[in-house]
Length: 124
Image (cartoon, rainbow, N blue to C red; front, side, top):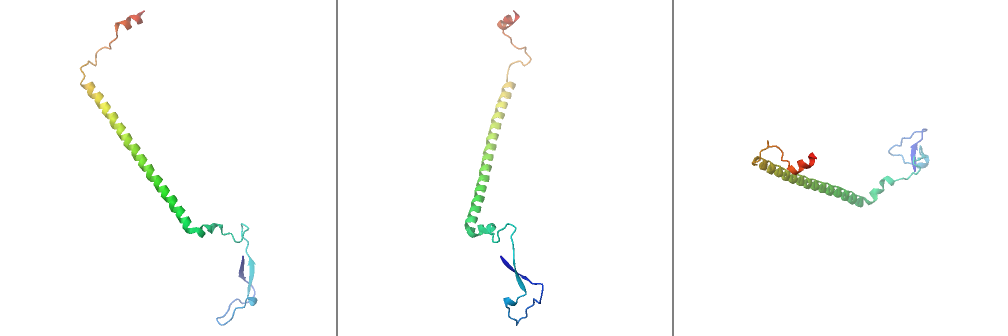
C-alpha cells in the first residue's frame, strides 16, 4: 500500500486558484509495511461480508443460551418441589410416630423384656 507523505522541502500550500499537478507535488510515496507481513490483511473484517448470516448466528446462539437458562430454572424448580414433597412426607411420618408414642398405653419406665430361653442359653 502506498501513502503520500509531505516532503520536508518546499512550500506545500496550494491556493484556491492553483491547480494541483502530481508531478510537481511536494509529496513522496512511501511504502507502508505491516507488522504481520501482509499489507492488505482484512481478515478481521471478513465477517462483515456476510453480516446478515453473522447476525443470524449470533441471535441463534443467544436464543439457545436463553432456552438453556429456562430449562435449568424449570429443572431446579421441579427438584425444589420434589424436595418439599419429600420433607412433607417425612414430617407426616414423624408426626404419626409421635402421636402413636403419646397415645401408647405401654410403660416407658418398664424393664426390657428378655425371653427365658435366651437367658438360659447365654448362662451356659
